[in-house]
Image 1 (cartoon, rainbow, N blue to C red):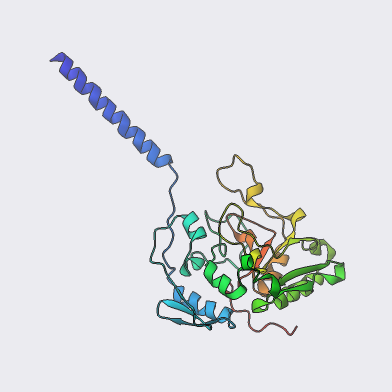
Image 2: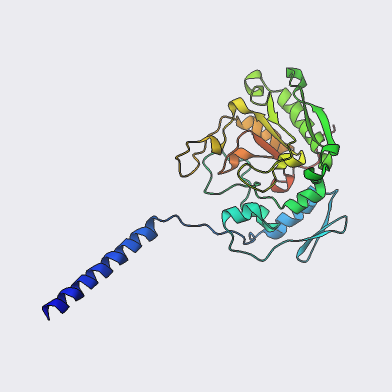
Length: 281
């Protein structure tokens, strides 16, 4: 009888300890964020998407984006339980708007996995800019002057969607800044490069010739952080004056990303407010 009571007490204690341990693990385990649901204002985003690329996009037809070539892309793949890696590697069109680009806000540490613009529906960009692996992008590149008043040299960007003209307008505005600001944009680290995002299979906007990295000597990048850090600790040295000039001409900034890349600017007018007609080239 005594042995039975002892065994029962031991079992109860063991059960209690296991339950307590599981509770502690549950409280300390990282919560996996889920993505894939379209934002409530997705219709507005889709209309702005079509307006942002008038040479290529025709209309939204029910559940599809229709290109002027007649090609159709489904807006949604029907999956609303994606991990962050899945939304980065294999997004649908509405995933590109999973978080708004925070234009006009003071740069600061972004929320976890808030990377506005870093999610890209690759078939759409391939259709517009071409596939660099098939040599479809290189033949559309144009060499433009970069900060000529400061002997900034030249850069090569795509002519598709007027990216070359937009970046030329950026260059002219940057060229008017004082030397203490211009230095951040001098000696750019690169434009066209047929490659994927570092650590990913998803294609970089550099692969389309529609991105530029400014002076690396004044830049910060999340992969350059402390290797033992569990999460990126945001840092930035790029002045907001530089950022606002790029944004006025359709370029978003990687400094607004949780996985920050402060040297990086890419042409993504669909994520920015309508700036009206650009000034004449």
